[in-house]
Amino acid sequence: MEEQLQKSLVQVARFYDNRKVGDAGFLGFRRSTDLSILFSCLGPLLDEKIIVPNESLFLDLGCADGRVNVFLSYLAKFSIGIELDEWTLDEYMQLRSELDKALKKDGLLTPPENIFLFHGDSMDEDVHGAVTSKTGISFEQFDLFYTYLIMHEEFAGLIVEKAKKGAIFLIYGLQKILPRYHGLRLLEHISPMEGILAFYRKE
Image 1 (cartoon, rainbow, N blue to C red):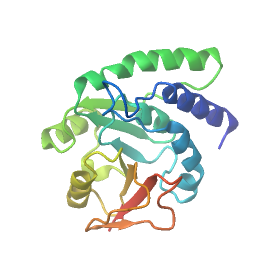
Image 2 (cartoon, rainbow, N blue to C red):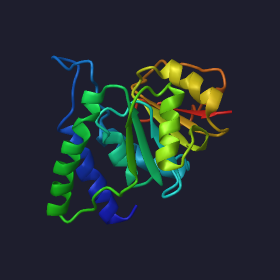
Image 3 (cartoon, rainbow, N blue to C red):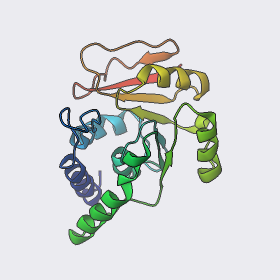
Image 4 (cartoon, one colour):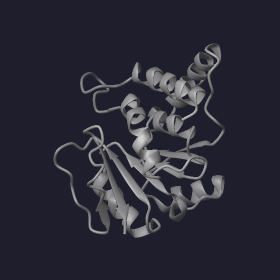
């Protein structure tokens, strides 16, 4: 990975990880992906061609404040997210503004203009239609799907039903017990990566 890109990703991970929402407190039910862990996974993800730089189409099925979308925007062709809670999604722009200022101050790369976030239910056909209308990308074209454990069974069923053969489903938050889904094959040789990230391929 090119040095400037690597430094930028490290800075993005630090920025968002310092703004994590944990298990306690009023917003304890909002759990944030640890981007430093995703950064540690990038080597194998690239080696396994799970992410193909500037080609992969990425969809976060519960994107919250868009942090995973921002992180993977540096590698994906398009980084798209859907979030049910509008007030959570509303945090995206303020955080992006702060992040961009910090990156520019350090002479690092700001996220590319390939991020599109949508308010709605990831299971809703109308939301999929809005994504296609805005980006030109249909659900069936995405290469890579992501969720932080929430609704993983429902999303697995949706991917089996609608995604293209070979599409990858990443689930963050799984540990020793890795579920199986009919129509998806667990990539056992790399799951759970960093003890928390599991990979499934649509057959």
